[in-house]
Length: 348
Picture 1 (cartoon, rainbow, N blue to C red):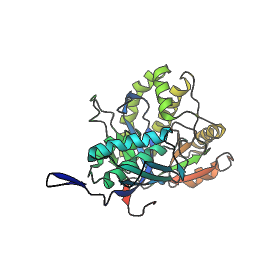
Picture 2: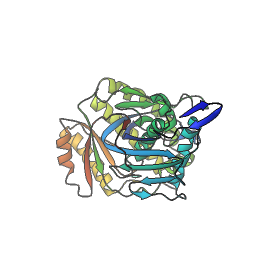
Picture 3: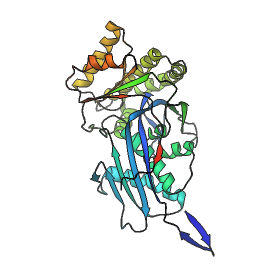
Picture 4: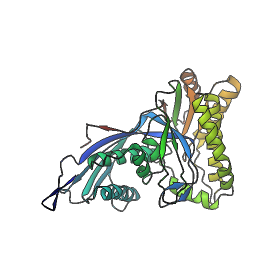
């Protein structure tokens, strides 16, 4: 905060520390491809569900006493030559500019799930960062404004600002002023909705999402077909959510995810994230649905992890059926979760 006193500006350094918690989100209709890479403007809108049980907690502090920036992610101090260091540094400059100050920064962040492996860790990470910066710098940004700024860290972070079911609007303006997310339904709207997260490997994926997206847009002959069908998916997904229609929602989400991966597989060179467990899970879920009439549907982001959409009365049956796939490292049951929130307990 800055106050004016006898034409001199005095920086008040108290309360320049904050901690935020943000949940990850899983896109039901995927965001894939940017019309403007600098402003992180997507070619298509997207719809997601924010999940409980998968979150990032982040503490930030701006201080005149820090000799340099210090960024710690999951107990690892980042080197300033690393890409992730630059992403956080560049992201912080947006908020420093809004606050009209330039102090060094300490960030300590932890997740309770594997990062950079296809679980949208950057969504929760940058949503938490945006909220923590907003509070530490007393910017008083609205949720819509937070959503706009969060996308500069990660496009999908714009959706993790909100809880429940969320739509990120691609916008039409060149400056991105109409590109932000809004909540469709809150986290209490569909109590029976469940997603079973199947972690097939904790290893980081070999091609980062940004590179995969760029390569797909530039080289996949299927990318135009993706854009031609995604608007229909969006319209039908909103109807399915409004009707709490798990079958329609699941089928739309599954088909949308497979189309996205088809664009990656046909990129040059091809990007194939799936491992043996991914394929086993896909085949098992198809069999569950076709032979045993269970409401279970897969969705896969840019990675090897499989998320299974189902309901509370089917979740145990789904989990038990899939437990024989030994390659799966962990199953996490999730339901719609809250949006980003500020907490009082700091990490340092």
